[in-house]
Image (cartoon, rainbow, N blue to C red):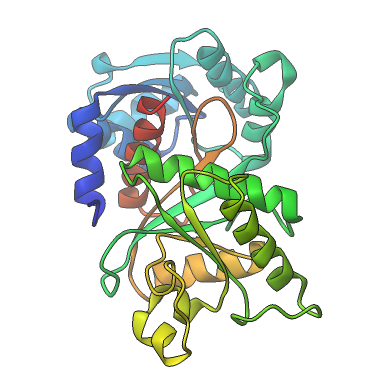
Length: 301
């Protein structure tokens, strides 16, 4: 069982190094993470960005640029397009955001000429190592989809299940989280949660066990579930927390990081390749963890 990020990095090493195309790579924290990933033999990288700035940062952090291809494209929009082109040409397996706005790199990924669209919803999958939980925990979607409708929620679950499978979790437990664990017609998310569970039971959603609605406590605590008389196989044993909207997902994400001190990683899925898209506020460690996660996704194609 994968219990922490050491396990994730070990698994990424076992499955072999992949190549990242880093867009606007002239960013110290990103280059530190790329350097570590390369040292750990998780990933190689093509660094696309302002070459002069990349060299300055590399000298500052003792990074040997002879190990990497550096492509001089100072403009962030053009750098994003070039990084995506490398994917299209088969020269890289993962796109990573450097010092560029999220909207710019996603526009490059979604450009029809790039050929990376799948027709699926793009969604964010966060992975956490929380000291008080016995296994790693997935949270989706905390960054992309604002208020997803039922069909989009289905695809968000499917995207996250693919990430879990890449981490050798064969049948993850998906808890569809709401404000309460009972269906209430006045609370549409609880109605959607039951519908998603029914889709799973009918074989429309596969590769996992879906349950809902759950309140957060009875999704992750067996004691809380027993106290409320909930006997669903997912109750208290969730691997994946499917959040009702971006507000709830984002608050939970930041609560786990800044209040619980959880280690974390994040990746955008739904395109033909994983997109490592971290926040400026994310630590160097989180960026390294995200590269490992992206590498495992690329290995699971």
